Image (cartoon, rainbow, N blue to C red; front, side):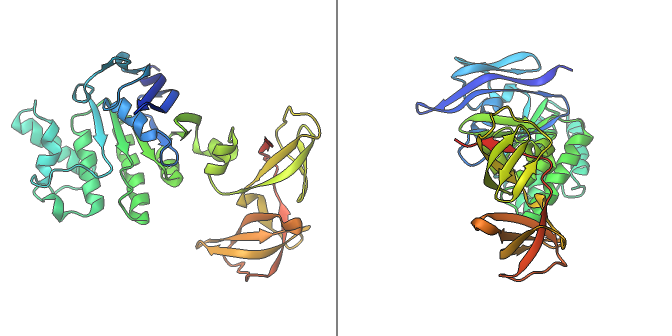
Length: 348
């Protein structure tokens, strides 16, 4: 399968500073990808380069095998046949919903245009809203109109720049799932930029974690969580703590929690100081456990409670208990370690 989009070692600069460097990836038809990272990591600049709003200092961008960006040349955004959904929706307040969605359908006859608009309204769940104006819609409805407008011209690629960030948490989670379902139902290809890992997990087939203008790891959500390839990804994705240890063999680490033997081997020499990633699901409530922890913080999460526990030698870990295990601050609990899937990084 040939990719729709290819980024070949692109570099972007802003006022003499490199904000994207050596970025390379490809996206196949029907795939939904995420660029995930903290503010200022370069993800929005990369999206703008794909859209045609940001020139390249180095590298190339190909869309359907056509070279659309390289140093000294940037094909105009309106000629790229790319749909864009902005953070602030960028809808026209003086136009109704029908007119907003049909804005990019200038080449169609009136009948064809209305058919496309009606089809898009049905796809995004807004049939019957065509005559309403933007101020008459909720934030979630406005976002659906923005998506419908982006999809109406049937672009090769749809770009979404933090489109849910202005919504409340519940609406954001629901709408991100709905948008994914809509795009998948049309076999659309999309790229979402977000700093919210939960949003990325629910939306993306593949997720590229970025920092300092570079892709550090591009993988599935499962692999990013369970098999991070570097410390930044391990720290950024999910929750967890790092505890110090010493590698005693290629798959065994001695720690304050005891001896941890994992399912992967490391090539470092025996005696190498390491940091071991311990996730909340690695520390299990166990009345027969051989570890004792003291509750120092708790956060109720409905079906579960996230506890911060202090073990001996002042080691602190996180653990998820079923919510009916309701322990008070200062209470002691028994634990066991289920750390068969070991993730360790050499101390620097």
